[in-house]
Every structure is written in C-alpha cells, then in structure tokens.
Length: 168
Image 1 (cartoon, helix red, strand yellow):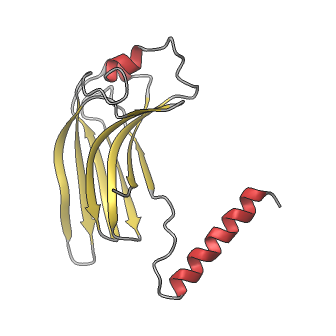
Image 2 (cartoon, rainbow, N blue to C red):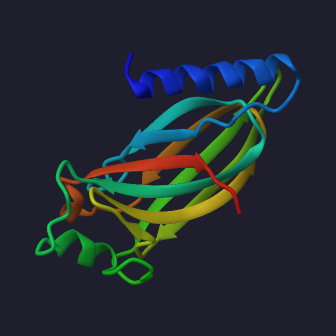
Image 3 (tube, rainbow, N blue to C red):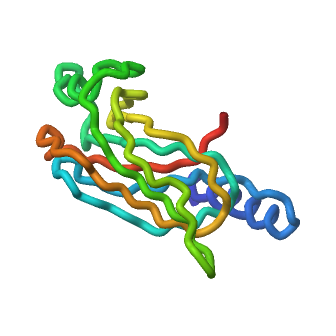
C-alpha cells in the first residue's frame, strides 16, 4: 500500500471516530467548483451543495491552465490585472446567488452583482480573483453564477467559480 492511501485511511478513521464521539471532526477541505463561461454574456452555471459544518467560506474566480504559466505569456495575467495583489485589470461582472434550502422554505443568502477586478494570487497553473467571503451554516444550498458581460478574450480560458472554507 502506498503512503498516500495509508494516510487517507488514517484521516478518514479519525474523522469517523470524532463524529461518533460527538467531537467536531477533522475538517476536510471544502472546495466547490463550478465551471463558468466568462466569454458569453448571460452564461450560467449552478449546483446544489451540502455543507456539513458552519464555517467561513471564500468565493473566488479561478482561471486554470493545463500547463504552467510561462514567464513570457503575460496576456491573460495583464488582462486580469497584472501582478498578484493588483486591483486593476478588466472588470468582470458576475451575479452570484446562494440560496439555503430546507424542508419548508428557501432563504436567499446572497443575490448580488459583483464587479470583480484584479488578481489576488498566481500559482503555477492558476490565477485567483477573490470575490467575497461569507459565513454559511451547515445545510443544503443552491449556488448559481451568471456572467454579465462578453469577455471574448476569455473564450479559451478554463474559468471556475470556487467556494472553499478558510480561517481568518
């Protein structure tokens, strides 16, 4: 058995043991990812998600590449805002709707147009543009993103709306 498989089994066992004992279990990274076509105005993507824990969540746009960003390939980076931490670049307006669903009714948590701009992080194969942070309770949610602008420069870019938990 390889080391990764052994570690995964140990982590799962610890999580199950802590749930059965009444303790808060080890938090596995929550990473909800919806593909979105940012090149076409009106394109949408939605998904139902189940969050197991009350927590703080960050919402961001991520731009993925199948290869590392080449130092000479600055076209997308410049389009989105240049270097990490820079809040310039093209504004990409997206509407994000998050609705909590329970047995009897639905509660709108977020229904807002975000005018996203800048770059908050650059990795080997990813560019991150933070949108917002929100505190969500455990439960079932419907998440939807609607692109509100034509961005033909992004027609060949793998863009995703990502929601993940984070600690302040």
